[in-house]
Image 1 (cartoon, helix red, strand yellow):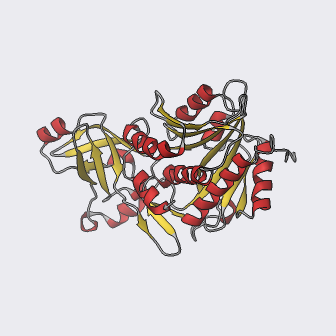
Image 2 (cartoon, rainbow, N blue to C red):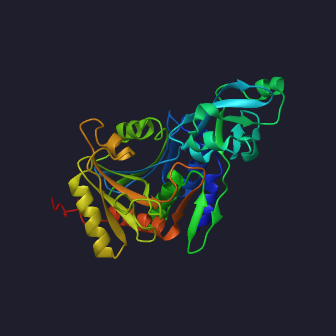
Image 3 (cartoon, rainbow, N blue to C red):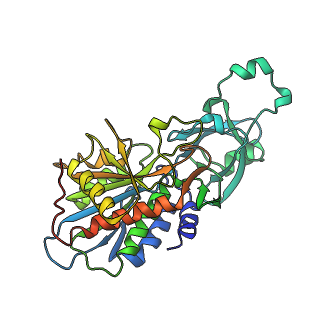
Length: 351
């Protein structure tokens, strides 16, 4: 699989949390050649399933969310300026002067988040001033009347950050949280393409993770998995980030370990990584994971749930960065987990 091409395809359609229709259509098209069935669920999550050839097989669900952080239009200000509110946790410090895309039902408009030039700022006040979302507006270049007609309240907005390549197999783009992890699951499906499975395997590109986790929890309720693995991003190290809370890019997948995760699933993932020579790191999560793993584990009577994370730099900013080798390691580990059921339910329950 060409990771860069797949990420480029996944990064193109907008999918602000609650507005995932176009992202769902793209995910569905990518799943179709790799699954027996593909369906779009009521919340615009997408689910693809490969069935085992034996009845009563265990059910495994792999989840990566396809929604992204963004904004929603809330009103207007002056001539051609749009007010907005965040959908998901955007850092407002990085927003001034960013190019954005305003996704109306009939067209996509380019805009820029207004920014006061430095020549016009009071230096002393500027040093102490904290930028908030309420201070910002989007300039779409239209008159007030044209703006109100073209950009209805409730229109979703995304930052425009097309994918690009850095050195040493690093990739930058918007929405790598979590489209890069969905690409890793697609890679796992491709690795398993010609192999018989001992499980009914369902892959979910879930909606609304950034605002509620509703897409993953409802999908888990529908498909009743015996085992689930959430695939999401975690913080990659940069010089300004604390080492104890980050993971070096290029050292493989991060396997979550903690009370919101099933210890048997976590132990199996670690065992498989070591046995297959898949680079990995242990991520200790002493509480809520901040991912769909916490949402899925409590569905119905409970789901044995694990977490595989992809190190990502600059999370919830205008442009995020991952390393392709880490994404491939995530996909290889997921494929190994699914294969492990071919010899019966994995027995590496080293609690």
